[in-house]
Image (cartoon, rainbow, N blue to C red; front, side, top):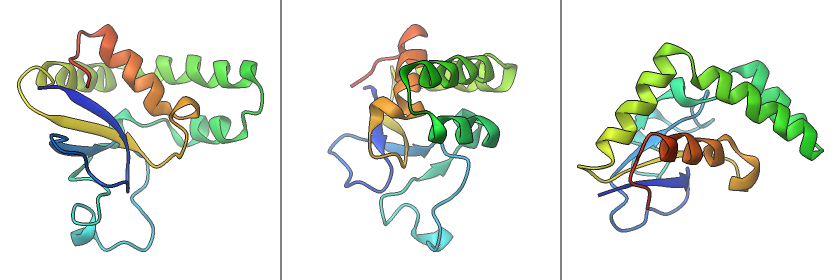
Length: 128
């Protein structure tokens, strides 16, 4: 059992389990009833996504220093009680069930899901 970090909308991998969308907005033009069948997500969980202002900062980041600023801001948001509790829940579930968390970004290294990977690992999550 483990949590996988995935790109939403990509084909599902064997053993991926329940796919959790850690995004602020649902996919445009996709009917709600098609989110799961089109490999977006099974559950939308925006509490683990960056705030709109922080997301704008990430999209505008062109330098390593700017990305580091985004990462620091995202970690601060994830230290808030609701996000911290959600991270703890996902980390605990990773030891007993297969699940995945993800975002739409093409490059994980420049996406908040890379930071989620670290935050979950820090909480002792089993990561695939």
